[in-house]
Each structure stands twice: as structure tokens, then as C-alpha cells.
Length: 243
Image 1: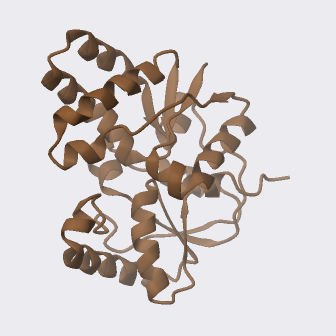
Image 2: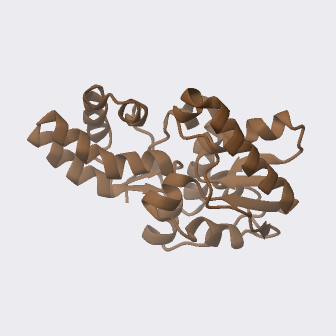
């Protein structure tokens, strides 16, 4: 199976360790991962009201990943963009060939937990992480992709990990991409609510399926001088292979 990594802009520029973690886990399981040249999926452009400017990015995406049997990404947000919105962008373009390419490519794109649990049939990746952890289900993973318990199932199989429920878990953290820039006060207030819920768990680590949300909440935790760390769950799964 030819697995290609769609690393995303945020991971590439601000959290490269997450991309490396995905590769480590898959290689541990015996798979080879390729990393095609790639660029933005276009989510920021579309969400800000520039769908036509998004067309070249969609065209580039389907070209970059045309040869992959499976495309994996550690971002529920960007996978949701590809699977749910690239079709819309192709329709706006009026390019039938692009629409066909999107129809072929989009179903092969999987968020990391979807690939592990649904495609590879794996729930125990051989990790060890002896810390108290709480999980925030990010909006796109929760509402668009319907990840459900997939990330939690993977985390529960990690040796030594103490997984604690997060109060108000279904509530948005307040990031929302450009929402955090355009509505900063509201964004910070929502993030502060999330921080209070995280602190109430007594967790040492907050994890999620999107680095963007983790960066937002992590920044607020840092401002509060909290010792709670933020880590993408792929990094937890890549940690401490069991003996």
C-alpha cells in the first residue's frame, strides 16, 4: 500500500514533530510513507470567502497525491476540507476534469486515527506514555469527520497512560482559523473556558487531532503559567515503544 503524508501548513511550519510522529508510528507498523511535494489545501482561502483563489490549490493537491493509494494527515480540519469542500471548489471552477480528479482523490484521504483503526485495523500501536492525559475532540473531527472514539481507542491502548474525561469536551476551543483573528475577544473567552475545563481534570497533557487548536489552548495555558503540556495524539502514539 502506497501511503502518502499530507502534512498540512500548520504542522509543517509550527509543529513538525507531529508529522514525524505519524511516520514513526506507521514505520513501526511496517509501512513505508512517502512525502510528495505539496502546498496548502486551501481551507483558509475558502473560509475567508475566496473560493476561486482556492481552485489552483485544489488542482495542485490532486496532482500531488494522484499516485497514492492512501493519503494520511494528522489534521482533522484539513482532511475535512479535502473531503467535504474540494468538490465544491471544483464545481465553482467549472472544470469537469478537476471535479473528476477530486472525486477520485478525496475518498482516499484519511485523518490519522481513521487510517489506523478503519483502514489498517490497528488499535494498539505499541506505545508507552506514563502520564495523565485528557482529550479535546476538535470541531472538524467531531462534527464533520465524525471521528468518534477512534482517537480515544488508540489512546486507551497506550501503556501507562491515564486517560481522563474532559468536561465540556464538545465545546469549541475558540480557535476556528481566521475566527481567532477576526473575533479575538470571543476567541480568547472561549479558549479560557476550555482552559478551565482542562485544569479541572488534573491532566498533565492535553491532546487533540488538530495542532491549530492545541496551539490556541496551549498559548492560553502558557499565559496562565500552567504546567499542562499540549501534544498531538500522534506524538503520544509515537512515544516509548513497549519492550
